[in-house]
Length: 283
Image (cartoon, rainbow, N blue to C red; front, side):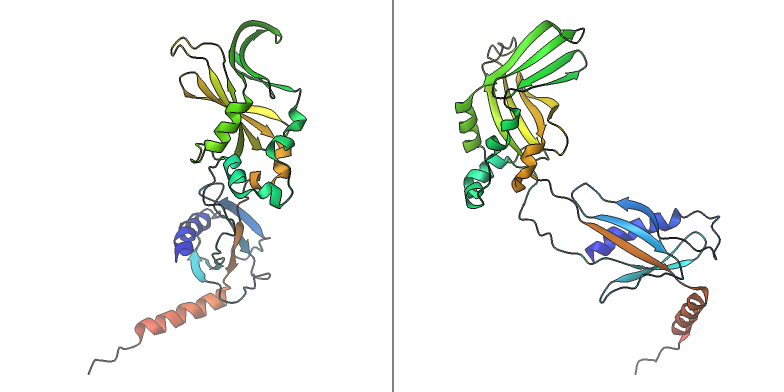
């Protein structure tokens, strides 16, 4: 019932969007009208309209419903079966370092650790410019906030922190809450940055490494609290570890067959006969 409640409005919207100038005897190719999903992790539903001479042949026990378009034509639409998710994840918002230590999966599966997968970043510095400021991340070294002139000349600089292996180990061991991010990540802690004028304490930054198929780069910086930051770095080598791979949404197709005119007339006649059949009085 749940899948029907979700898909019914989508079918109505899609059918109503079919252009009114299309002739009833036109033979449509398989045509994808749209893909619908409430977010990028829930199943996606593609509605496919099929011509009368090439209908969809459903399997057993597929739920169906008859829908009308603007021209009054009727389509018999077959809804995909609702399947239980096969993933073992209960939340997409997790610091994977905690999961790795709790399950010790990298030893069981003989996988490389996150830090081993991050080794290609050794001796690299990544720069991201956002308006007036640029942010420089040097792996296992430092994070700086810079204002550059002519792309290279540093005219203003703040240290957001230096890599702190002890703080990193303690952080990854103690973190058990769900993160505020939608990605699964591994963290490094950078401490002892430039003193913050507002708090009188050194700036700090948590660098969050996430899986991404594109090149390694800094993607964002967020101020979690005054002078405490989170810097996100995407790294393709992390994708080699299954626990860092993002779930791909399941894609389903709703097949809608155009009901032939003669069959449609027969259906209407049967419905009329049933509706007009005299009711047997209760004894």
